[in-house]
Structures are given as C-alpha cells and as structure tokens.
Image 1 (spheres, one colour):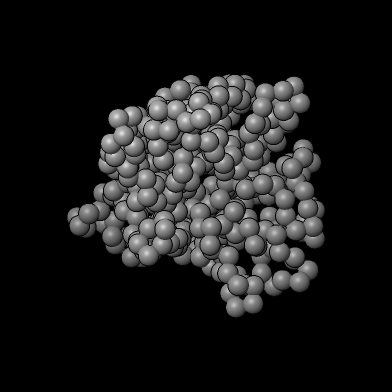
Image 2: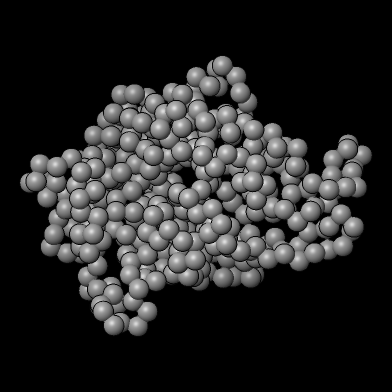
Length: 375
C-alpha cells in the first residue's frame, strides 16, 4: 500500500541498487516532493497564501511506538489487525512514516522474533525489518542509570551497543533527570548525565532526556531554608533551564514534548521569589529551543485541544486537530527541517472492543497532518 502517490521510493531502492542511507541522502528533495499531493500540493503551489514550504520534510516524519503500544503488544494469533513489531512497522511504513522512536524493545510473545528483542539477536532482526521497510530508528525511551557504578556503566554500554545495531543516532529516556524540585538534586543529575552523555558519545550517540510539564516548573534554589535545610523559594530559573545551563552541550541533549511544554506554559506561571513576593513568568517553549536549537534534535509532535476545565489546560488530539500552533513553533525554533518530530498521542489506543485499531487509524490521520504542515 502506497501513501498518496504513484511513486514507490522503496521499490526504487532495490531498482537502483542503493542501500537505505544512500537512497535517502540522494533523494531528500524527491522524498519531500513525493509526499505532497492533492490538497497539500495545492496549498504548497507557488503563490498560494502562506505557502512557505514543508515544515516537516518527508524523511523526518516520525512516530514513537508508545503511541501504538496496543498494536505492538497484541497477539497476532487472535487479532486480525497488525500485531507485533514487524507488522506494525510494515503498516507505518506504508502510511509514509520514515523515522521510528522505540519505547522499549518488547512485544507480544507470539509475534515474530518473540517477546524480548532487547539483545543482539533481537536488535539485528529488528534492524533487518527497518532496512527492508525504508525506516530509520532515531531513538529509544530506555533508561539512564541513576548512579555511576561499574555494573551500571556496563549495562549502559550494552544499551548503546543495541542502539548502534538498530542504527540509532540517539539514546535516551522518557523520564526527567530527577523528579526533585531542589537545586542540589539537579546539580547531581547534571553531573551524572554529563558522565553518561560523554559515554554515549564514545558510541557515536547523543544522549537525550524527554520531559513532561513538571520539568519546566520553577527550581527551588533560594532561602529561607526549611527545617531540613532545603530552599523554599525560587530565583525564577526553571528546572530544565538549570539542567541545560549546567550540562555539556556536546554530550547532553533534549527531546521537547511540545504538548507538555504548552501545558507548562498554562500551569507554571508564577513562583515565590526570595523576598516572598509572587512573580509572574510565562514560559515560551519555542524561545527555549531557539536559544540552543541544536540541543533539541528530537521533538514529540503531540497535539492538543485547549480545555481549561482540565488541570493541564489541554487534552490530547491527533496531529493537526488540536490548537497548538505548530507552524509558528517550527518556524520560530530555527534550523528549519533539521529536527526529528516524532508523533505521539498517549491516548491513541482505543477500546479493545469498540475501537480495536484506533491507534493505527490515528497514525494515518496524524501523518497526513504532519505532511500538510506549511510555514
């Protein structure tokens, strides 16, 4: 199944005798053009109002498999829908996705390859499927050790080896470097991430952290101190701002979840200053990225509809059906077309009875939304 045109790049790979990386290096412009048809092509036609080019080039349209975790984990022996890594990757490739971010390397035990592919043999099998389908693995939401020990270093090196087999450029985690609000804990986390970031670079990888809204809340770094000697007030620095300023930009990177960054803009507006006054400070996600745009190689392109009846101020939506202004955001962050946006929607899986294939169906809807984005 082809996405929306008569040109099949995957067949051209075989016909021209190119490997996957050679093909994409040689045909970036063609790949972007191939994906633009119908209404999207009309929108991009010369002279069309607001038609300033594709904001997410075709080779950089990605998805994190957490979005379709129900499909990866369902039993192929009992489900008529795509089940397990191979079938899910096949369908995502046919939709048009070219980049994949993993959320662990386990699947249903009855899927081809077995339950656990987090080993050399499993990763080699996965890589063969990625290559056959014209897909590029970009990263994985694994784990970064919480301490620096010989055993943890060895485990991290093994994770890097697996990442290299899969062809990833990045290795990371879906968790904050620390859940603490206190400056001392963020200082310790920064030192630990510098260590593992340098370690990752030896393997040719960029270490990244993915964050939710709380990481953009204000750091407790000022007095008066509480009974345990910890600060109770803030200088106005946000947790991740401190982390960025105190880690090596050559070794530590971030994946901004654009939805959660907008939730932070809605929720985390004030802090108590050292003198006890309450100060208003509105978070600007695009400005944070623009200041160090190369430190954000990955995004989660998660959309949301404004809903102030909810504590977060938003509810998740398929890409292109929400209220987050992605056109403006991607133009403001700079380095147009160089970031790797992974579509994610935590709530994509539907009811197993009434909407058993919802996450895969929304993957098509959201791919089309990414392809249509102009700016």
